[in-house]
Image (cartoon, rainbow, N blue to C red; front, side, top):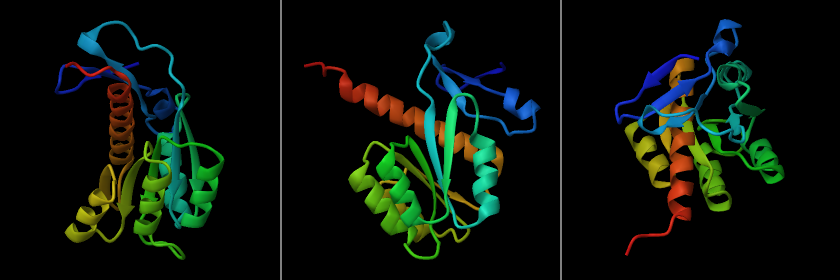
Length: 176
């Protein structure tokens, strides 16, 4: 597996075997502190892609799916909330403009009911005001369509790493 150092001296390990099979790049597997040994086995990242455009859902799912990542799709907000009620997701890629429920309403519902889930807004109608509102409501990131596979993978990877660090920090005793 190729290894790519990040800016902060940590090492990201990417699964590129899926890319060689024409299945996209796959999600980063973990971080190594100070370029040491490989990360312990972790549970698969659970990602939900919510978009009313089938081509977008399938493209994002194909880009993200790997042996280290489960990807599920939903074609609207109502379906997304129903699926989330059945199982937890680490990262949700959420379109803003879909028939039925507005993406901002879905974002609010997700952050109220599942605050540990990281949400990445993806929209074909980017605007500074919407990006600000999404971040205020708890979105981790905001991407404009068309978002390429690398953009989607990088955003999902960053959101997953952020979630892991937040959970790790929450479970460590604070120094007094």
